[in-house]
Amino acid sequence: MLKTIVEQKRQEVDCAKLVQPATTMAIQPASHEFAKAIQRVNWALIAECKLASPVKGRLCTGYTVPELAEIYAANGAAALSVHTDRHFCGHLQDIAKVRETVALPILRKDFIIDPYQIYEARAAGAHAILLIAAILTDEEILSFLAVAAEMGMDCLVETHSREELKRVIKTPANIVGINNRDLKTFTTSIENTFDLLPDVEPGKTIISESGIHCGQDALRLKSAGVRGILVGEGLVKAADIACKTKELALQQN
Ligand SMILES: O=P(O)(O)OC[C@@H](O)[C@@H](O)c1c[nH]c2ccccc12
Image (cartoon, rainbow, N blue to C red; front, side, top):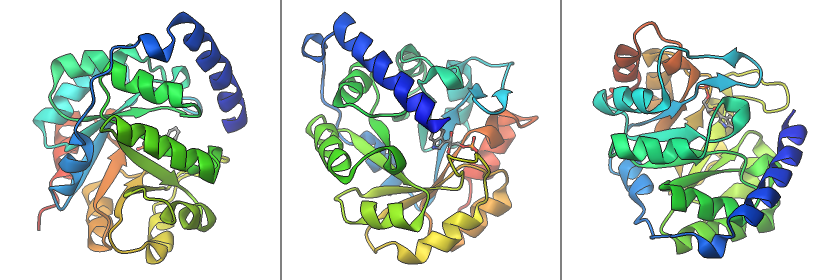
């Protein structure tokens, strides 16, 4: 599935470049709002606006993306992740809609394979992007980090395996994600974070991603030295989203 999504993404990006070349975009640099929001606290919830997933279909029907963002912002999230890939029912325009609604920094959640998408993200108002080590070469990671940095943007560089973590640790990436979801099988286990954590070098900010559902998971991760979590499904499928946001965001102890 990952391979198919990436192939489709290449075609989408090629089309988008024809419609609006990067040189015609109005770009104002960010000032690392995303990294600051995460690094200034000892526990950060990055709350994800995720309406659907390619495996599970529709996850959330009662709310729009900006409505979710508003609930997250009012209940303690440090930053937001907004899906812009259509397999997740996301659109690039969702970023602008969220920006009009809330002041929290926004990560563009997509399959970034071309610098064009980083310009597009910034033009839409995103402060950060996700870079997935599994679909990028070391050279691409380095050059995409540099493109983002030029625009004052931050990168969450996602790893899933020990091998990917080793590759990413060697780069200047300072926010490193450990994805608990295997993007090949789509199964999740938060034990993946505990397994890989000893290989992380001091100075890197670690975010545990996916499959996190309750305050207990959050507390275990925080106690192990993780700085924050990226949560989608656990929030959007909760009976009371505001209450679940508080449960996952408030781990000050
Ligand atoms: O809904 P979850 O299990 O809380 O996961 C959120 C987020 O980590 C997940 O959407 C994600 C992380 N990395 C990705 C890469 C591609 C697609 C999706 C993702």
